[in-house]
Every structure is written in structure tokens, then in C-alpha cells.
Image 1: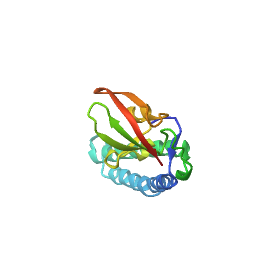
Image 2: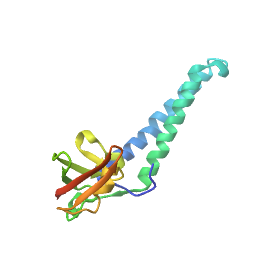
Image 3: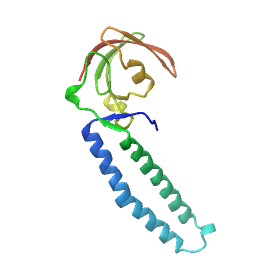
Image 4: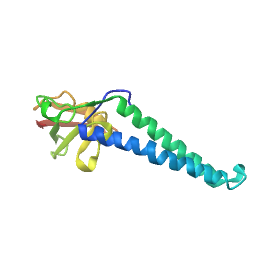
Length: 158
């Protein structure tokens, strides 16, 4: 997880808080009960159910810690005050891939909101990072695992 600021919309921030509350108030007690039930079944050295319950609890605690970190570094961005003179968080940018001549539109979002199926890419992804700060008409050369891709910025909207 990045220690950088996580820019999110208000609705996403509220969803994260609700998810954290659910983990702490519902899932954490359920994990403790599962461990207690497994412990009652005898020898802990050969108790696969106990090991699985402990592992699930550890994974839950890691998720809680990660989400707490994201919430602690979250900064709520008002969609109505987005500067569209250059690519920034929450802008929608229409690009032309200069290699394939295909046009695509992405919205630059936080890591938590990224969803490629909805054309939302993280500002911390190689493409997101390469586009930040660019203006309409500029070309961005972005290093990706498959090589260098050149994109021309066609339009930026909120």
C-alpha cells in the first residue's frame, strides 16, 4: 500500500468507512468465534480447522490495517472543483494510442476505486502516472511491461 495521499470521492470514502466498520463489528467477532470453536475440538497441533481460522483472522486483521491506512491518508475530492486544463485525479481523459490509432477514455482514480472494466485506472498505475499533468494535445510516452506506448491526449473532462 502506498503512503501517498489517496484521493477519493465522498461516496467512496463513506463506503470505505462502512466496510471498515463491518470488518471490525461483524467479521472480527465471527473470526474470534471460529477460533474458539476450533480450539474446543481438541489438540491444536493437529487441528486444521484451528489453523484455518487463525489464518483467516490474520488475513482479516491485515485487511483492516490496510483499510485504516487508506482512510487515514484519504483526501476527499469535490468533483465540481476539478481542473480540466490538465490530467489530474478524477478527470476523464480521452487518448489516442499512436501505435494502434485506437481511442480510449479513462478516468483517473485512486487505487481503491480503480476498475479497468469501468475504464477507471489508478493514478499510481504506469499509465495513470504517465498521464498526470499532461494537457490536451500533448503526447505521453509511457513505459509499461510490454514496452513503451505513446498516447496523444485528445480531451480532458470532469
